[in-house]
Length: 378
Image 1: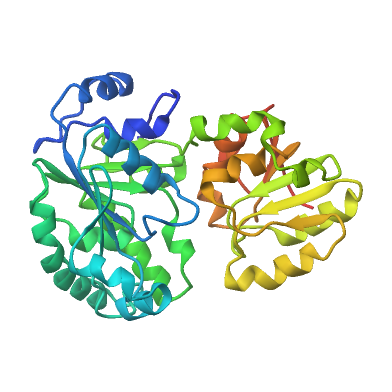
Image 2: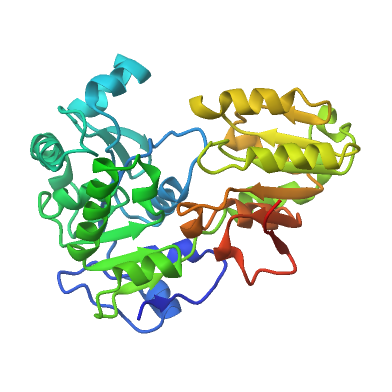
């Protein structure tokens, strides 16, 4: 049975608490592991993430690795995302140097881009293996320059094929999403599901953000742990003071029902948001976040309602000033196989800001009453 990590102020910190030794020793309780590990020699981390280091809305990947670096661990953050040609087309040739050599972006943090020389690495296993064979040759020198011991920390299940390529002491699989439901059906979903299992099987430790994900990866050896996501308390607690909100947001008609995050068609229930806007005509529906291509038309149509205001992407640095304007914080998610295994960081960001939360489509938030209320159906 997967073990649940006891709660304390920053549960993500427990991910950094396992001693990095070839034996992968697991020491005592979660709190003891956390405290003892900080007295030991820091270990280095090779982090594989499909999300960019400087993504507009940082998630657990950047949060954990930033904290690791501040605690003295050296981090090589490898962006594993798109086919190289597509990536350069989207982001410009300025990022090409991350393919050739890692770039230092913060103390103890260097960022590199995996040289995905073949497309379709989420559709064909051979393409994924070739990309890692080629990419690892470029990255191996940077990885071996890190102080030993080194841990391979996997967020992208395609990284299952990278285990053993970097001379790491062992691998950790940090399963923070149901990845197979983030891709299209058919061949892509089947391959990602296979890689998801392989990443867990080839790793010495597995962390999962929900009980269902942990049960899926439980191997009977006591090294699979449920470690829910959390938010950045220090960053968002300032939003408890409504006066930090910009004057134009403080002037919105109250109550303000707000959402801050990615407006993703596979996640956000736009029909529910429209119904809320029509049902509570005297309230303001305030949306802050980027709309993915498939959702842009839905968000544009919604923002045409007189009491809906869409702010677009807001810098993470100033996002608390937007949340400060909320009277009630919303997480209006769809009910589907993907959200069934989502544990959103934003619930703790909202709670740090002192906001009551109403959520839908998120069974993993059951038990957080009365501060979080779960809505079902329309």
